[in-house]
Every structure is written in structure tokens, then in C-alpha cells.
Length: 320
Length: 120
Image 1 (cartoon, rainbow over the protein chains, first blue to last red):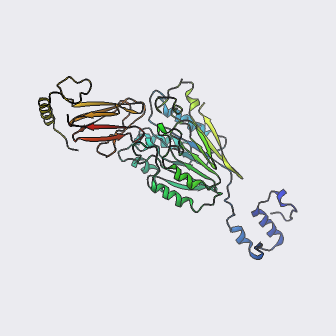
Image 2 (image 1 turned 90 degrees about the horizontal axis):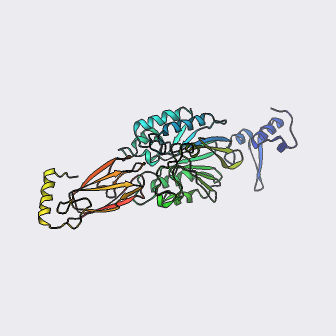
Image 3 (image 1 turned 90 degrees about the vertical axis):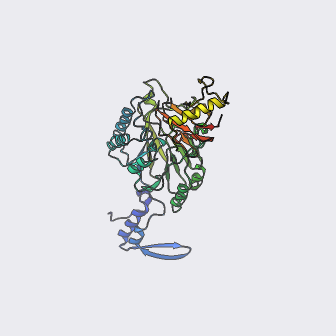
């Protein structure tokens, strides 16, 4: 630790913490004096250093979003969905900046079979990274209506599989909007999940960056094809007070983005097959494209949080 | 779900055929005078085709999925429910009670349809 002090701590790039240590070492004293409302008070320097900083400390980090791997799909749009998933995983392993974890925004498997889940887990395990999952509707097709998914990924989740976690000062919220869907509707969160979300967000400062991930888009991309969540409005109202909210979704196998106030929405490419743009085909089924075009329509997404900068930087990487 | 024996269905069919000169509804592909016991519905382009079907009690409806995406046949009142049907997958259900049975695809809930069961 330096013995001398500088007249201009800003030039030294000192933050509050290092400045306190610096001054303390110089002064030989261990007291911090503050003046609040005209009344001076002092606390020990050790105590001051131990206090949480006023704003959540976010340091730069990178994570990865992968979506709609559909392990088990083998129809015309891509007879080798397993092969393209492996290509995506090779790209993840080759990224110059290693992600700290992966978010899988669902449709891990095509038909929720044990073999397909096991295969997906083995492939994604090759990345060596922690993976956080949310289910797609293709992951809730077992006779138990989701038991297969929850047995594998449901530990420490609530209800039909929702949960949250914090990483480097960013709050991540995982939602399930593919359970208990009702006839004629779109995707659905349900009252229990919304009540949990309200309680989960309540203690957070509005300056906390929030990332929400769920399979089906949380905004209405195209109602005629069910591309939306009928009660997402209630969730978005709870998120409106935050300075930075990033919503990451899958399901539609193409990138569509929207910004609404401080909330930005991003759907993702699949690693299995593309789907038509809204209304560009009679139905949202798998879209067959020329073979050489297929890898350009599949891909992964890197998300980077930068120091002092609220919005995350998203980098799309197609397979070719 | 009560099962009708083959013979019981046959007897009912015969009684209907003899007592009713013409049926109110003749599903396509059925010869006049032969009561319809089977009805097919295609699952195609994320829709049930035909979307509304009227059958007589005792009719077996068979759904066939021709899409490259799986679908399910799920009754809104939970009275029948298929497993996930992949491409070319089939599901059959025999409707014994009169009434209107709304159903949908639980993966793609905007796909809705109805079976109306009405005595001829």
C-alpha cells in the first residue's frame, strides 16, 4: 500500500473503498467522519469498509443464452438438430471471453423423453459451465406434465419451476410461462408465480439491473400464433420501476426485439431450425430453407455487462 | 371413461339404422343407410380440420397429426387427453355422451376446436 497521498484522488482512479484505505493508512487513524443534516458523527474505518456500498456493485461479466435446442427433432427443416446443437456448443467453447454461465430459454428437448434430456445435458455439460434452465412447452410433454423436467432441473425452484438468483450485482429471474395453458390463450404466468415475483423484487433497489428469462415472449409478438403471454402485463408493471430490465426469451426461433421504457425484450435464434416471420406462412411450424442458408439462421447469444454501464451488450453469433 | 363393447356398439348401430330412415348428419365417405361410427380430424398447419365436427353418440373420432411439430388433443373439460403426437401420430376417442366438447392443443393453445355429440 502506498505511503504517500495524492491531491487528486480522481486522477488516481481511486474508488471510495481504496480512498478510505489510503487515507486511513496515511492518517494512521481509523475513523470516518460524516456530516449528515448538520450533525457530525463518526464510525470506525473498519466498520465503514465493511458496509455494503450504496449502489449494488456490478463488475463486468459475460453470460450466454442458448435456446430451442429441440434435441430429438429430425424433420425436413433440420434432420440433424443434434449436429447443429453440437456446432453451437463448439462455438461456446471457442468464445474469446469465457461466459460465466449459460441461460437455456427452453425447448431443450423436442418431446421430453428421458433420452433427449440426457443427451442435451451431456452435450451442454461439455461446456463446463453452470446452466440455468427454464422449460419450453416441448419440455413439459411427459405423462407427468413436467415431472421429467422438474426432476432434472427443479431443485430449489418453486411452483412449476420459477426461481431467481444474483450474480455480480445483477438480479436474474427465471419464469415458467408454459405450464397449465388454457384453450384459446397465449402463454401464461399465473397468479402464484406473479405473487412470488412481487415478493422477490420487493427488497431490490430500483438501480439493480434485472434480467428476466422465460421461454415464450413476454410481450405480444404475434397473437394469432400465440406468440405472447396473456398476463405478462402484471409482471412488467412490477419491473417498471427498475432502471435496467432485460427480458430474454426463445420459442419463436428468430430474433425480434423491442424496447419499452427501461425494459428491452429480445427473443433468440434456435440451434435446431428457423420459424417463419409473423404471418409470413400459414402456420408457425418449422421453416425449411436451402441447406447452405440454415446455419445462418441458427445461433447463440452472448450477453456482456459492462462496468458502470447499465444496458447489457448483446452479441449474436450465428452458426455460420 | 366407460368402454362400449364391440357388440354393444354394433347393436346400437343396427337399432339406429332400422329406426331412423335418414341420419341428420352424414359424415363424408359413408354410404347412405350405414350409420357413421368413425370420424377423422386432421391436425394440419397448426389447426384442427374440420374445426367443428358433429357426430352421433358411439362414434370414434381419430385425430392424425400431419405437421412437423407435435400437438396434443386436450379436452377443456378434461374428459379426454392425448399424449404428445409427433408427425403421423394418431389418437382416438369414442364419444358416448351427447354434448359439446371443446378441445385444444396444450402446446399451442391458440389451436381450438369442438366435437358436438348429438343423437341422430
